[in-house]
Image 1 (cartoon, rainbow, N blue to C red):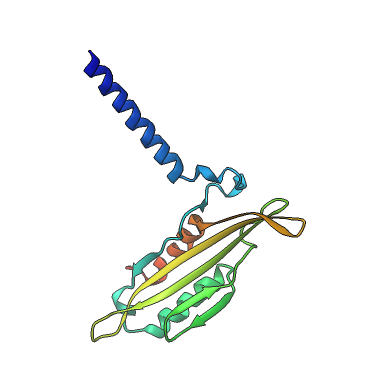
Image 2 (image 1 turned 180 degrees about the horizontal axis):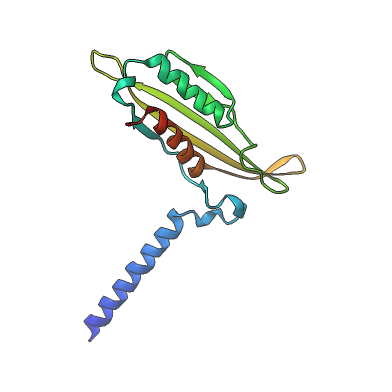
Length: 169
């Protein structure tokens, strides 16, 4: 009987630990973040999404570069820095994609990178994409709260657009 009670207590303890881990990993510490962005803003290190470029574009770096930059601009981002030779593009922060109430500002910035093959062909291998998000509460001219992470909806939307142009047909 005592052994059964210990087993039940151990199972209950493991269950509580699992729920606690889940709550921490899903961002419950974001209680102060405006509710309008809770479903899209992920409070963690930004992730990279990458896709393999389809075969007919592997040898057409100029086309991949041109389309990548156009997709970012078409989605409302202003290019902040780009270096064609390295395949790197970074946008300026855009606070106009998601409008928040009163004192809150939500900036979104995109980083994209064209990855080349390592072998002799030196063709385009992949396109990588990262979307950074910063939420600020500004009151009386100073930042009161600040959160950094990434916007999962913008990341997925941009990735889908890239997939339409660069992905398999």
